[in-house]
Length: 444
Ligand SMILES: Cc1ncc(COP(=O)(O)O)c(C=O)c1O
Image (cartoon, rainbow, N blue to C red):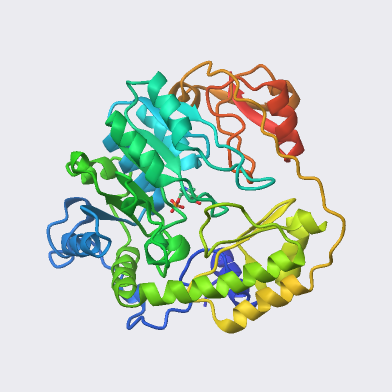
């Protein structure tokens, strides 16, 4: 019937491989509680279906119900991912730019938004306290020092959990923010489920003013579904206007409906489902540790599986191949790590595949994965100027001494080595070459 459907064909071919999904989205393509095919619910703004950015009917009701369920003052839907929530959050806190105290563990969606809004980040570097090869956490003391030096800062922005499940001391940082009268904004892309664990680790319940939650990563939500949660009375006005500045005027109804369904599922089953998952993942982590694999240290998301495979002499890519041979597709792999994202929708049979893969990993001498990030070099021009000015791509060795037009961020540790507007130092270029960056975009 059809001539060529390269994307559709790739997806259906991939589906035929029947890998156990240990990557996003959290619904794992098998939602038993769905009564309808969400394709059938792909409607648009109609008199009966409300409108996301001018919500006054069923969407407003869905958002109010979500706010109540998540015990927050306001919860708004996003069909534009956590990205749109981060955009809205930054616009609310710094509507016309200015300084923002900011963890250097930062996703490119925030980098781009800061550039567009004219926000100048004041960096707080993470302390390497999560184990070898990982960035670590920013601390309340680090945030205090930055606020002390920058009393005009509009707020504090951080990522927690990070990609590897490493969680910051949100309560401690929120106390410091309160003292200085500034909001705490949390990129909680990887932590939408944190309120349903045996210990409630959700940032909005630990004192954050706003949290951008990428529901589709760990929960049964279609890709692109996210919530912006606000629990600070200073920011209850203007959120829709802030998000509509960036979002499409045609948000997907199936995505928004999946957020509504997920919230109802969480209310009914969330605690039980995630606490069961916590125990199951705990057993996997125990097995991994007994095998000699490294796991992040300190406070971490109990349902994220981050394995330092270099500790047993395996690159992450090699280990990922082993997972695939056992029928498991991981979320991410590099020269030293593999990350798996489980959810309550993974079956016991799928967890047994994961365990089989871990058991069959060969054990050898540890690989060196020194990842000492070079010091941040000076900001020559603002991120806004750097991103919006004419630029050119040059080989990395010729980029030394030039001004970066884009962020360069090896993952892990997930910390940008160079941000737009910073001068590319020799050390930064060497580091980036080691992590496979052969060129950089620099200002002309
Ligand atoms: C830490 C972090 N923040 C934000 C985002 C953006 O989320 P989304 O893809 O839902 O827009 C991501 C996506 O991977 C992320 O890892």
